[in-house]
Picture (tube, rainbow, N blue to C red):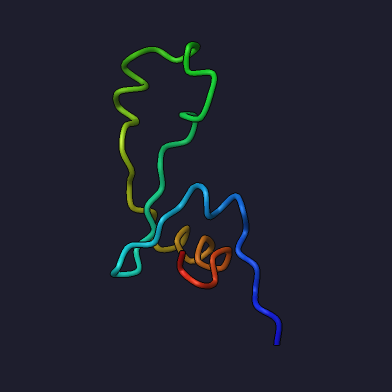
Length: 66
């Protein structure tokens, strides 16, 4: 059987913790940040845990839990 491929976009944006939860950074923090105010940039720092419904979709994209 051939190996399943990981979606390239998912491996750049999501991380799976040791307990199986999915961490994601905020949307809108990749480029064109000059058009956002400082409060927006500050409040969207760090990562957050995805909901179970969203995590189920992301785990399909990453079959080997990168």
